Length: 119
Image (cartoon, rainbow, N blue to C red; front, side, top):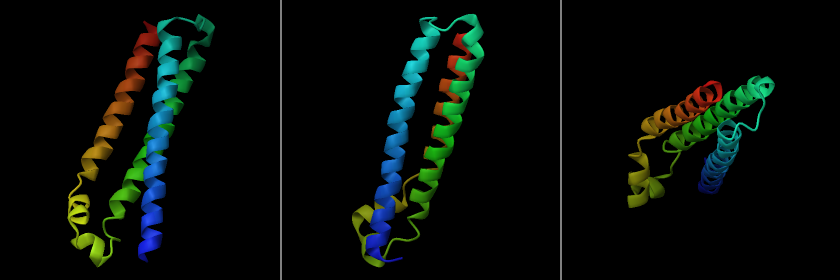
């Protein structure tokens, strides 16, 4: 892969990750407001629960996919980038930990919201 293509791919996947983190944060806060303020009637609980679960799944898959591509980008660095201090640091990034943390945070938020919804 040439350097320009690599840089563009990395920029695009990083932008995807930033976009979903922001979107998931805003949507989760909105859903939390609906749950805590009891705006939704009892008949609407299933719809709210479905939104909590589906938004969480979407964020989980989207974020994990972006992190997997960023991790794979380490192998595609050219010699100049991989020899630089930034390239060496990027190669040491704990992507597995980032992916596990993504799973734990999203599941934690979803489970907490669902518990609050049904209590």
